[in-house]
Length: 120
Image (cartoon, rainbow, N blue to C red):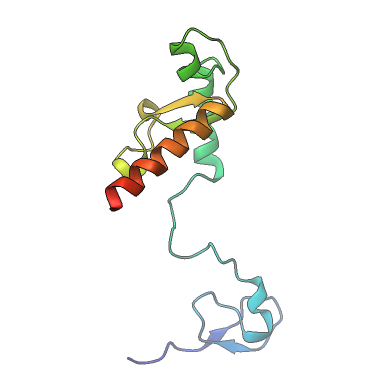
């Protein structure tokens, strides 16, 4: 496979050339962000996630939905998937709910247990 053509380093006024995907020469390789390649557009970060999270928290009145189903009013701290992404659930408002930290921890442990059982 042919090598990448050399391009100038992305650091301003640096005259070195590089063939790296991140665009920095060896001298400035520490400027490259490790999360900038591979998972583009995925994950829970940035403005789109914050907007969706705020929308779900407002919809659920900042109350933990699992606790509310049990008849308790508990302030929510997080937003979590109802059907986990690992089990095919989308990251959309209809599949998200506000949840308190203890419920979130218990739900995450239950999901991890189910994943381990599926793996065996």
